[in-house]
Image 1 (tube, rainbow, N blue to C red):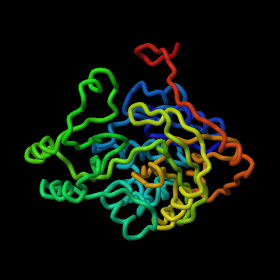
Image 2: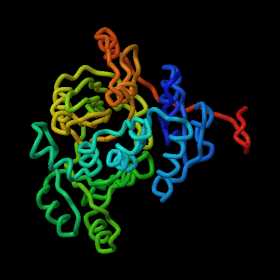
Image 3: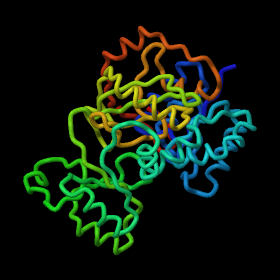
Length: 343
């Protein structure tokens, strides 16, 4: 009998790729989403409309679906959901369902960038950008002093993707950039941030050195009990709405070694993704993300098997070929009526 796998979010940028991957590997795929016409509805073997993740009955519905569909594997989506699942993993295991959320230590640190970077500074020998935790206006002022002479950016300590990312600068954006170019992020003045703090409009933030360079990299980590099983490094050559849409797979032993140290320090079990600029880490996404499948190299399947205990076999020749490949993420169009019937 085919294993049943459940994806509660099926309307994200990579949903089609992931759902088709598991169908191609013999799984029965159940999709869910709060959006009634999520793309997963038209690809999966069954689809359920779910409450929004922060609604009180969200996990009640997830558990109901797991029981009804006899789900074997539950792929939680996003940091918040994955953290809740990691904290209650035994509840799902008791239902005969294996959650793929990363281990609790990884998630508790990974969801808070301030805690994560202080942990890295104290526990892991890897290069870090200059950073400073900001929770109050006084913290912000201290950060400006600490980073004087350095280009500064800030981001919410607890956020997904590029939400809330700003650059802080005394210099306004030149008019020729505002009116002729598509800006990737907001540039605000220190006074703007000060005023926002006075209005209690700013959450806990991490202030960081703004790194630039062509080596903007994503690096996957698949780990089991702190041992790095596989790591793939690829460039971020095109980005839309915070999602990498084009990248080259590259051989980068330095980054893989840093990932090995991170996996060990986090006692990692699961599949997560780190982001680097040059050789400095700037973020960890403690969830599934962009991946390229080639032959025996399938990080999504590895992210399941490290939890189910199934054997992971990787052909070195597939790895070698993968390091010569480029991926392209692109849009397709689907036509349906108000009842969801596809044309």
